[in-house]
Amino acid sequence: MRTAMTPCKIGTVKLLFIVLFLTTSVPAKDVQLTAQSKTGSIAFGGLTRTYAAYVPPSLTPSSKPALVLILHGGLGTGAGMQKLTLHRFNELADRDGFIALYPDGIGKSWNDGRMIDGDRAHKEQLDDVGFLSALIEQFEKQYGVDQHRVYVTGISNGAMMAFRLACDLSEKIAAAAPVAGSLPKVLAGTCRSKEPVSILAINGDEDPLVPFKGGQVHFFGRKRGEIIPVTEAAAFWGKRDGCGPIPRDETLPDRDPKDHTSVEKFSFPPSPQGHEVVLYVIHGGGHTWPMGWKYAGEWLVGRVSRELDACDLIWDFFKAHPKK
Image 1 (spheres, rainbow, N blue to C red):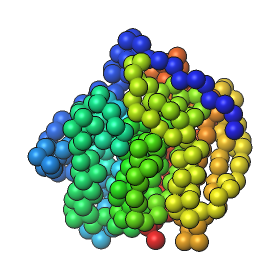
Image 2: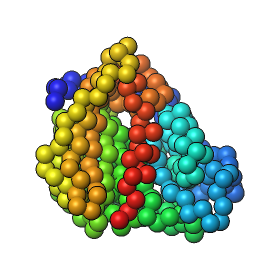
Image 3: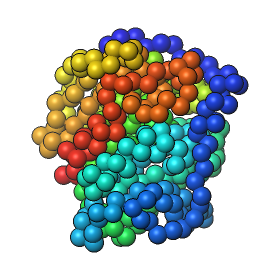
């Protein structure tokens, strides 16, 4: 595996660029969800928790759709996450009849298990696991969601929150797909998943914010909690899920030589029950969503890979891994 670039510090100007992208707001209104992406809220933990959701018009009371939670990064929102993914999950929901759910973190952050003080979710130790569990239950009741097909993906802080759900909510989550994130070191020592959760991870090895080789997450020149190396996170889940210990290493064809990235795929042998752990390493990739919106310059967040479509890849993986 190639060597990742040393993470760089983020200066004041760079921070402003990130904030301009990630602070897209979502109105906190309770409205009936229709074929359009709509907003809603639930009361949880003494707070009003908001979300956006896309419910395809093809659903009927007997549909039993899958539910995909799509978690924004730090300083983000559900609406911003739809923009980052170019609304592709909504298109896939139309095609295949699942619900795309975009929750909002309090203070635009998630309590993903890192022990840091820089945002409200961590400072107040908010119960985001409980909130997301309650939200899943609401959609199960309202839309008859198939309890065997509840999935979670996310980027950065949202990716680490996806890992936390795989640890703390494994009885509800069938598979998780973190992008541009790794397992917080604290969580690696306390993870108590009750059931196997299949994992698909996507990481750029030149991510300037979340270091591929582990260590401190950096933001605005500040340390933002320690993570374990991406490859160790994949091996951690492979062992926990009962997969074989030695992954198959495959270099994928170069679909777009002009993007200056390439993809290496590591697949752990499936468990006897069919659980899988797969890691896609985007060589030359940054803190970005493959085939997603290029929300800032390469000097700030690194390259956006055009070698694969993360949304399609993630949904295909989810489809193949319902809860056993």
